[in-house]
View 1 (cartoon, rainbow, N blue to C red):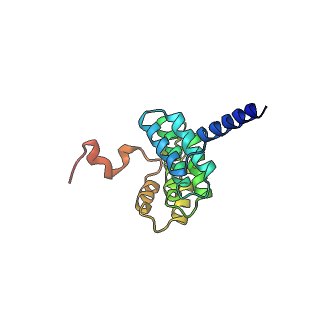
View 2 (tube, rainbow, N blue to C red):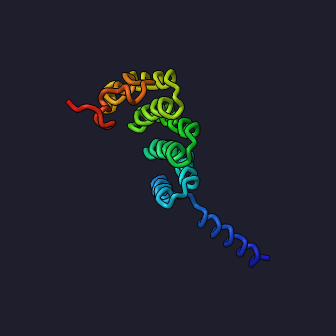
View 3 (cartoon, helix red, strand yellow):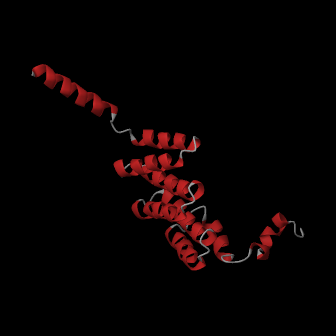
Length: 165
């Protein structure tokens, strides 16, 4: 009877040892590797797991930000991407990834959903919450040309092959 209990205890120990949680940095690195291997669903799982298991970690904001970008750019799921980015803004307001996330939310509303009203709201939130951020000129430029046809933006005439003065 004791031998059976020992074997069972050993099995449980080995099982938990093999299933132990990775650290926050290990989860991020694993997710990045999965991204490089184009295993995007698994990468998002690892990023979200990092934020779930280590919400107080300095890497949690980065994990959610990266998950948002994978959803948007690789999985073509902008709604889930925005949801992930908004979590960064709400849960990690003082983090640099919060500012980047706020910018991206406005950008996605403007350029993916063509929702200029919501994009304007998101960009103005950026300017209100991050007035000294390095992306302020980009946000101001986005607001200036929000909803305009690319052919009606003078600064882009060089790219289109227009007149150069």
